[in-house]
Length: 116
Image (tube, rainbow, N blue to C red; front, side):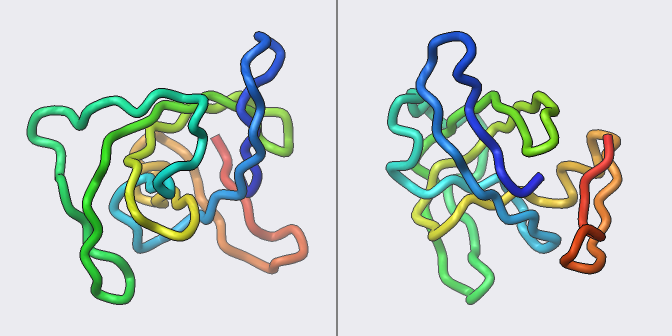
């Protein structure tokens, strides 16, 4: 899933997101201020309030957003993001695998995919 488009068939706004599938990420991360048409919900009790970035920095979680959309192959998906001060949306491989998906990193010309 490289590109994710929030569903527009229901009359809701659409936004195209390119999401990095990250084998080292610990949370679905959404940059602060993205998808402003979706309300930011408070963090759940016990949910982490800070995360460590790949370069060792610390970012604070602002809240969470639930997005429903469609992949470039037409599959309907839902992702729950933590909104934080990151540069691009990230989806952790560990979350996808835990939900029964197979994640393959292969040749950039068609060998990378997520299989449900």
